[in-house]
Image 1: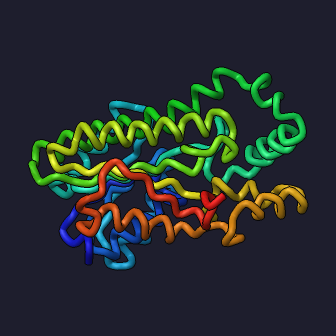
Image 2: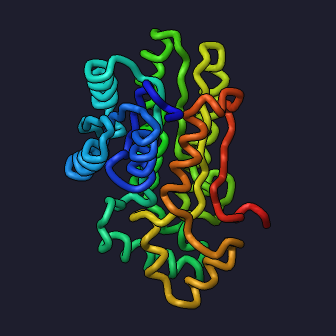
Length: 276
């Protein structure tokens, strides 16, 4: 019960890493606010938590909408009275990404396969609109959620924990396409800046930089040709994808009092990717 009595807001909590964090936090005693753009997935996560004996509620939230982020905070405060933890798990891997939409993923991975043979084409064929969309969702969405949730944390005067979801792509240019690596490196820099700004009010801000985790977002890796698939995993010493629960365990540590002297850090559950 490491989060007993705490209230956690999780953006993108309807699936993937956000869902895993929500379920883990609930088991550790937290009351959960699931914020997601896809109502059906968000409600399913809430139902799974409440059925298991936890306490959760859902609020519709477009990560890039300031009004939605404020409504998310209002909902959290009116339902549970406070906000102690924020996890910003809402994000996309490419401009056409939508959780579970395999057709969009097939188109994306087909282009990526071509770029492996002709790297320069990734730059020349990049549309500014696609770049901006990924940056907006991943970076602006993180900023807006942190900004909205920090205000009641500061007013309450009890401190708090903000956990951003970055990526190994925050530090390695080969871990994704141009918009994705740029957005995640920006999330990492934003995390460090917020950590400095909020340290004096006892709000810790840390990032998780996952490797390749078994979620909808990375399912497209399974579509690679066999030789490319094997080449991909040759870069991971543990030779497997990570599990969403392994990211949730990392988030639990950062959310709990066990991480009381951690701020401005990034932890990489990545199977050894950064040992090279």
